[in-house]
Amino acid sequence: DFINTNIDYDYYNKIYLESNRVIIKNFINYDVAKTINKNFENYNKNWWMYAIMPNINIWKPLYLNINDPSLNYHFNNCEKCLENKSFSYRFKRQIGKHYNTCYCVTCLLNNTLSSQSFIEILEKISGLKALVCNEINISYYSKDDFINIHAHQNKGDFAITLSFSDDWCGTYGGLLNFCDSNYQIIETLIPSLGTLCMFKIIDNTSYHFVSKVNVNKNRYVISSWYSSLYI
Image (cartoon, rainbow, N blue to C red; front, side, top):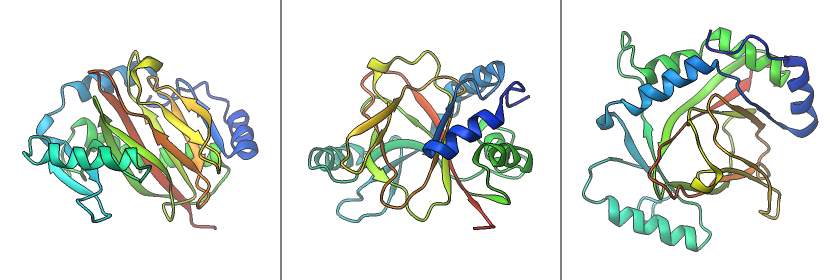
């Protein structure tokens, strides 16, 4: 099974409704999560694209091959924006699916996270009905990658992250930090294998960021967004 079978959904639904955020350790079956981590480590590196913001001075994502000679130029722009407290990011992501019969790890995960059986689990946790998947972002962060503080807008009713980082330590960086309206950190999530984080999207208030990775290790994560057709 992809998801552990001993999860108390009523318990986690109560937490989510009370705090607009819930973290479920060992949400993904351990053996499955280990296999996915191994598949990511062996994934064709040419299938990843570097996602970068800003694109020179244009505020839309730039996608570059991981061997693109202009990367350092754009990395420097990201660093300047980070220092100036402007929104910026740099990390690797997989863009779309390959083809209908592809059974690589990212295509299988895209199919799983948009499947009805997975969505029904999210309905139990969130308490929302008639959910649809709006977007899936399969990515990894390596040394110096980050995403600066931001709040999702017009993405859906809630977001989830699924961690496939194994044996991660808080000193490695790459921490998911949730902030209050004054941008002060109120909760920090260290990546751990198979952990689900679900948080409600509240326009201009759901602030969070991923701190810079400072070691030569890969932080694998899936982010996806869902909406209820009833709202």
